[in-house]
Image (tube, rainbow, N blue to C red; front, side, top):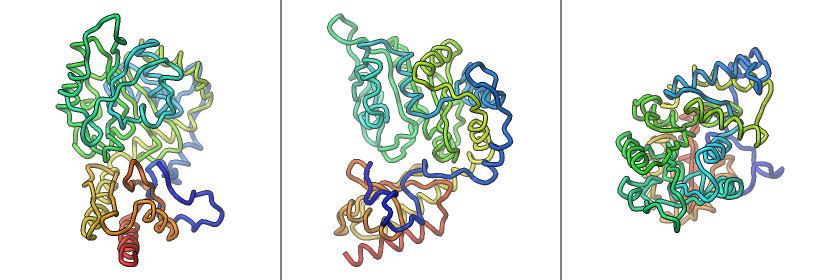
Length: 355
């Protein structure tokens, strides 16, 4: 993901509309107040009541036995693979999945795992493609031990894995003795978009996590859930990775607040994404992938403006977004209003008109 110039450039126009990512959200005043009032203790020894409450809440939400609070979603993915797999094992995932494309090769560097890409449209592979990627167990090939999906599929356009497809993946994995892991960075976006509960969406998956720093608007944190034995082993890797956070209840309080107040409002982000996509679609030459959730991918090349030029022109006007894998990605979130969407569309029209 690239953008020009960087937000830290002292000569850059101040950012007024931040469509770079839903990670750009700032904690609200009410969330900050909840964090300031949080009851805390030593998280590492299980003595932080707010962290404990968050873990219990997430385990219940996802229908699992236990959960653990982690600093980030990336750390959830890394710890999960380190528990599920052994050195030399093979993980199957979509080529655009975060654990392949955005985690610095951590799974190979730390675990010695081979991650094999299973291709498919819009960030998802089909059950048939998964079956095609499987091979007989033999001494000549790596043990295939884990299948991972990303809900929603970020680079695929924020697309939602259908429940039937998720069930098919877990069925195939079980048939072949493989564990299953769901990168749930935007899982609750998928739940709000479909009306399917997080528990139902996660049913059958051995591990799944939620990110609180994206549409939910918390400043940091993710929580991963699974069986008690699995979470015990994740804790071992959390310790090895340096992740014990001591009085982490301050952060966990923001996450709890987000679950109470920021889940249903994800529908507003989806509506703003549809409005942005609809407006862009009306500009001749701009090709838009219609959003299923809060991510809008578009290509302005047909309108005579390259993606890089469009991003730079918008940045000069105080609008921040990014190019990603050859297209522009705009991400709606808690700090983006309907008025900002309309202003952004007006600026895009102006840039195309003067190109």
